[in-house]
Image 1 (cartoon, rainbow, N blue to C red):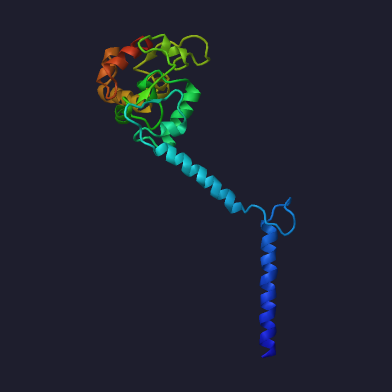
Image 2: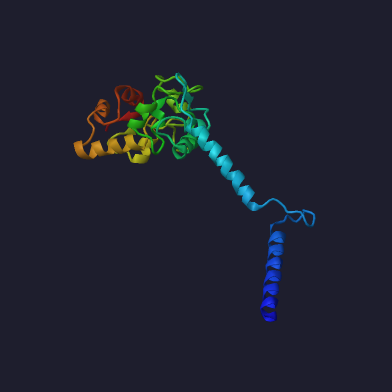
Length: 219
């Protein structure tokens, strides 16, 4: 009986020592002895709370008549647009920073993950403050969307019959989906006979073809 009581006492002492060790491990180095510091788990909780707050901001629906300026909106504001989550909103923001402001909705198509269907959904919910007015062919070169590889002067017109996907992506309003559509049309229908034939490519509207006409050629 005495041995059993001794073992019980030793076990309790071991637990007490272990608990004290845990308290010391959790305490900050600048915390006075006997006072626990901020547990790391609380820091994780605060980080999660911030993430949740950002997610809630991105999930707020737009008010009637409200639009989002894609040239100045934060990631959270862009994510409020329908069918645009935080991941795509970040890509839109990063593209804007890397390649300059969007001139119109057609420019947004250059962002991976954006296609004609999404553009149709957000066309009445977006605006592009601070961008050069569309319709001026020279303005499309102003923001670096179509310049010579070295950055000096204007690039020569892109030949639709020999252009690579990279060449097409440098054109304003042409994103990955439209570039691939142009290449697919060329493979299936043969060489372009005229620039106007671009309108036959899925996703290329008459207005976009008119914008591209000064920048492309057919040889």
